[in-house]
Image (cartoon, rainbow, N blue to C red; front, side, top):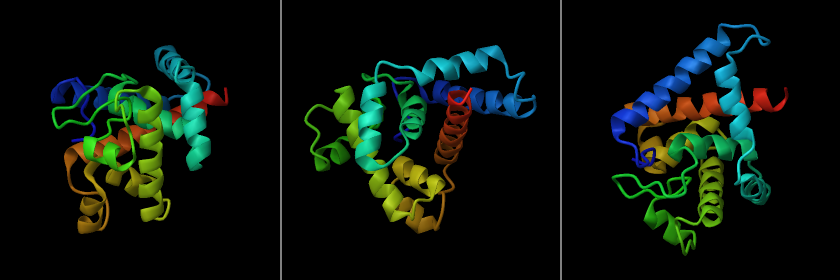
Length: 178
């Protein structure tokens, strides 16, 4: 699936579960007492070496750069060399067929990969009427699966992916305003 990077499936699931636990802990604490380790990781994520690319891709596609960054973080941990067992590659974990359709020449080039991921997210967002969760499900499982199930497919991996991106995005937005 698209969500996998170089990490084994169990490690990826553990990562997503950790993100959910952090979100749960954050929700159970007052806004001023969030765990410092959680805030530190989100603060670090707000400033990356790819920020200008996320900003540029966000402007070109009218997608919040923090949303793009959340997808990239969940997909690959911002690793431009990530490759899934199914062949998804780069920071945004783009499938080679999708990359080819989008005109990507080097799937591992961070700029090309992020821009392709943003374009594909825009296409999915347009297809699913700007519904964030359906857009993410289509990005992960493919638009046909979302259409077939008339919603988020019952795939555990896709459901975890959608929730992890939503949680990461919400935390990035909260952290960026502090």
